[in-house]
Every structure is written in C-alpha cells, then in structure tokens.
Image 1 (cartoon, rainbow, N blue to C red):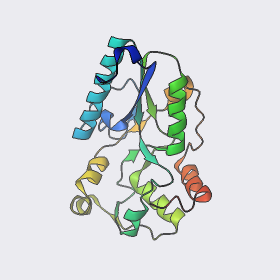
Image 2: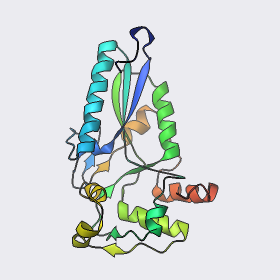
Image 3: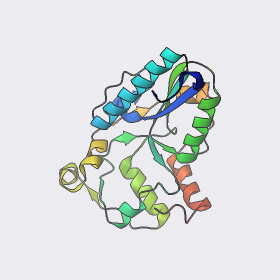
Length: 210
C-alpha cells in the first residue's frame, strides 16, 4: 500500500480474506458482526492484513471492501489428485461443518463489490449450504468416478492427516451470507455444492482435473 502514489489513489480496494479469521465456533453460525478470533497463524496474518488495509483506507478516504471467503472450488481446483493418492477422510458423522464458494460465484461477487457504493465494509462470501470437508471429498469422488476415500476416526486422523488438513478440521462454523445477497444483490449460480460440482464436470470435464 505504501507503494501507491498519493496522487494515484484507487477509488476502492477489495481484499480477499478468509473465513478462518472467525476461528472455531463449534458449528455455530457467524455473520459479519461476529468478533474475529483467529486460531491459526495464517488466519491471524489475514486479520492483521484486514486491519492494516482498513486503517490505510480510512486515512486516505478510499472505499475498502473485505471479502471473507470460504473454501474455493471449481474447475482446476478440485482435490482429485489427493483422491487418486488414496487420502482418507474423517468419517462424515465426525466431520465439522464448513462453507465453500464456487470460483465463478466468487468472481461475480468481486465484480459486484467493485461496483457497489459505501465506505469500508465486510462480506461473508460462501454458498448457501454448509457441508463437511468429508462430504465434499466424497461428492467429488462420485462425480469423478473415483473410488470413495477411506473413512477414518479422529484417532486415525491425528496420525494420518497432515497438520494443515487437521488445522482445518479442528475449526467449525457456518457462515451467514445474507448480507452479501441483500446488499450486493447477488444471485449465486451455484448456491449448493451439488450444483457447483455438477457444473464443474458437465461443462469442463477435462478442466475439472487437477
């Protein structure tokens, strides 16, 4: 931001942050009024970036939009390689809920945020259906015609899954996207995971691969 000349300031800046800034809410719903409490270093860095950008925007009287984005999926962004490698998943009845957004819907949100009025604001960006990471992997495997991944319990997960994957599984929340839909007048093309995955394979069967 310091590299932006004072005489060439943008009208608005849009920062793609992460839903991880909310931390673990044990499956409870979070909206933009929920106080952030990041539990991982990467999420703490994202929150620090949000706050730094907001401060700069206020100082320079530039509009600032923070997009707190759930897990992004779409053609070229599916866990097919992990599935082919036999990566296991936590049993669905043990897996915590989370949220996702199709890459095309994220793109239309960014465009809408660039056009919208207002000063500094925050939007949760996700589809309208919370699901678990295990459900996501199982659904991708089914769409791709791959064998379903092996299902394991928490004890096995602690020894078999990577620290990064475990950090995602240890946090749980359901994001409320109502403000996004109301204020930006967004109509998601893929409001559910089933619709989004079907489109990935129906329209771009080759691009759906990793």
